Image (cartoon, rainbow, N blue to C red; front, side):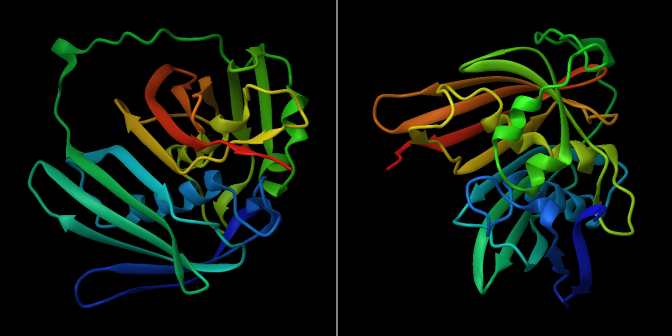
Length: 265
């Protein structure tokens, strides 16, 4: 198996909505439930559809907001993509993933006009040590599921609640198709919630995320995603995983994941 998904077919209706039908492979298997897809490759396949949907050379994706509406079943599913707010300088795109007759992910994406802003360019997030000298981190394998087994993880430093982990995958997002750097790296971001849990294994509390918010101040490049992640738990059953996103050239954005904390039996 060399890809996370297989394309079945794609269709476009009279209103311009594009619906793609896919089937997940065992590589997309989730960590919390063996019968579900992991949110990381699910994000990647939505991004693959976004990338090919009515592309414009004067715009790029600046934000992707994904709400997880329930379990993401393994097997066949569809992704429908449409513009809900067209515009000359900003454009809002809506994506919906459906499986077994139910919506499981609702996503909204801002596509934004680009221009030369070099005179005012400035960053505050510092670069971190890259993956080339970082040791392999096999601890990620404590998580079950095909997706986790499909990635290579390296880490210079991590502890309970905070860490920096570099991830890469040799697998394509879609069988028979090449994956852009954007799709490949976006398909790894959701892993952030599992790289620095605040508890020792085996966990006494579950902490699945209900969403994934990604903001990009530049487009990522390369084969490696760096996650500089902090995980925090509140005292009323809600937590937060926050990450600075890096590629080998430095920081390129941030992600946030809201967590529901659940006492395990």
